Image 1: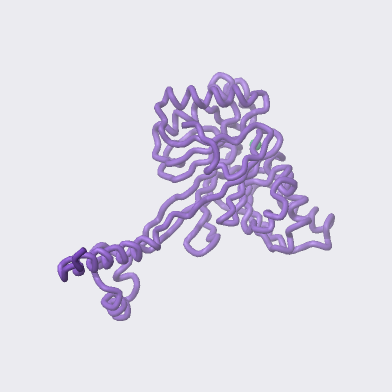
Image 2: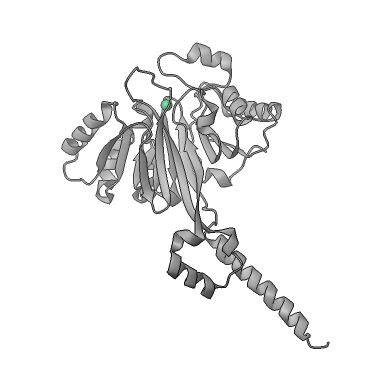
Length: 319
Ligand SMILES: [Zn+2]
């Protein structure tokens, strides 16, 4: 075989250079894998743990007995409302993990949390470190570099002038090299950066990576639009059952959630908080039927009734 010519060398060299540029530009934009473990059955318990972000949404019963030592990774706890199925796990969690100094956030007009904070401080005086923080509407909480959680009011508990139920949005910010600088060498980039600063060559990209609905009726599609992963409740399967079941605090039906998902832009859906009146076969069949009816192509994941589901996004889906 003949030796590669000078020309071939140049082509290979140029390709490697392009590849290195590509890797450098995109390293910053790599997707974060989300490992989500959850339990969510209406009336009994709901909690969702997003491991990579140290984030817990809601803290129903069974939180510590299922997650055990993994609870030590939780740094921020966001509670959506004070219904007991969303907070009953806090007592044991606080007793075992207060020393990790977690912060527990809650809707500012939910009186249950200051009571619980006071009670736990007396019931378990040997353990301390937990901070309890009330949240106002649209408050933004930085949870780690480049990641923020924003809360927004939903319509589960509709009391005029009082904030008692929240949904949560997780946003990620990344810096990307502006397109006009992509072909420059590292040395040239460093020189420009030194002279003009980071912002001259980089632009910020903001993405909603996850939204957690908490308990809420389906009301304003735009609130849940444009996110990578939507976690939404579906207490009832049909709109008819919803009408007869929605008393004081309002919920969603699977039918409405799927109708909304067909009309918004999301990449994956996780549905939970089903009523235990349904067996898993009824739920599975409804998801399958509605997915077909609304022509939903994205993966739809379900938190089964009465069971914890591990790593939801990477286990079996309805596709
Ligand atoms: Zn609930």
